[in-house]
Image 1: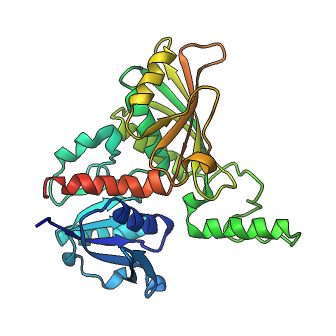
Image 2: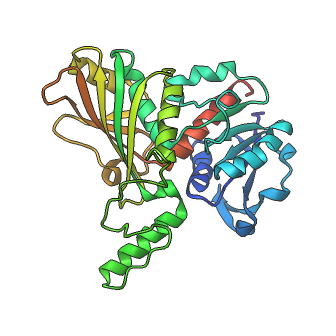
Length: 336
């Protein structure tokens, strides 16, 4: 008889949490009993799973000893409040918030550094990086086999879903209002988001960097095992509901062979290379897909030691939920 696992999804009513539930079903994960958890505000909601509506319960009253694996897809505060309880109860933990220290729950992208999982000690805890870091790691990992990367410059054009369901709803409201010539009202965003581009995603610190930028830099260095890698990251908010896009420029130690680069990308796991002369988009290609799309592979204008690329990925599905479920699949592999 095949072994199954009782699973908790914390943050089950959020965009990523709901997609984790969807991915568990799509990938035929060996789920015994599924416990969907959220704040008391969501208590009583339901999420479909395998033909049934599973009721969402209050995480405050949940006994984690009833599950073997817990996904944390809510904010850092929730992870810090409940992940320790889950571990103490013997549950494996997959955290998507970035709240846990890397020494305790290392950042892992299966296509880039799955070998880290073999070094974990019980109770098993692992972190799934931010969608931006995940997408970049998937693409840079195979390139590191053929290139000596000295610096990464990335401009992340981030969908509003990076900031949750409330941001998605506001973009929809603003778009509808403007198209119907109604007055614009803002609540989540501090200015017009529809038909506009905002220079930052979140609130910057004293140095002008927002949390998502700093998280991307730190997580990318960790996943690639390059702690001194120079990474420059800028995030901009674009009026797209789902799907992040990235303009990436790599500074290399010497001239790059584009044929070799394209071959590495073609062979890379989790990558779809778009042929020269075409390019991928978030809405037209990436959303709903389980790969990172890569296009516009080229040298710098007058520098053959520079490599430029365009990436796009479904931030909720590929960058968030799928990476977390893939990690869970690897965690349970030795127990099946």
